[in-house]
Amino acid sequence: MEIREFTDDDWRQVWPIVREVVRAADTYTYDPNLSEEAARGTWIGTPPSRTVVAVEDGRVLGTAKMGPNRDGPGSHVSTASFMVDKDVRGRGVGSALCAHVLAWAREQGFAGMQFNAVAESNAAGIRVYERLGFKIVGTVPGAFEHPTLGRIGLHVMYCDFG
Image (tube, rainbow, N blue to C red):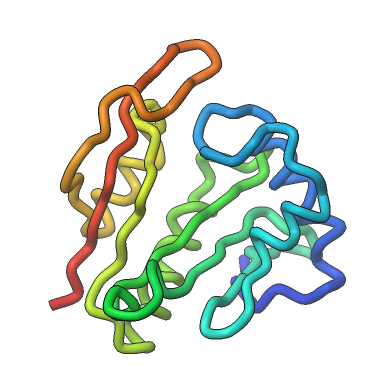
């Protein structure tokens, strides 16, 4: 598996992954009816942000976006988001993408990485993040409307690079 910069030609494979994850409405706070145009505008960043894909034999297995978490006085902290094709989950694609964005953020000189909204039901993602150095620094109770669990908490997670 190779992790590389997103190219415009990748969108035809990235969009079905984004569409499936967003429509499931069980991990992302995006509107489940997000249009393709809006999704592309949200997922594909411009510098200093960056979007990558994990590819194997020409197939996009997953994607990540990364960049500053906030502008101005908060721009020294990075953030990232990940989406993996449902057919390859559990094969380490998400872990590889997370390790990649952490290395990128360190190389860019960020002080740490913050995830703003990790659904507490996303146990697999949380395990990966904690294994790679993230800690849950707070939980907003009932902030996520899960399609089957109802209102559950959203974790704020942080990995300090110091």
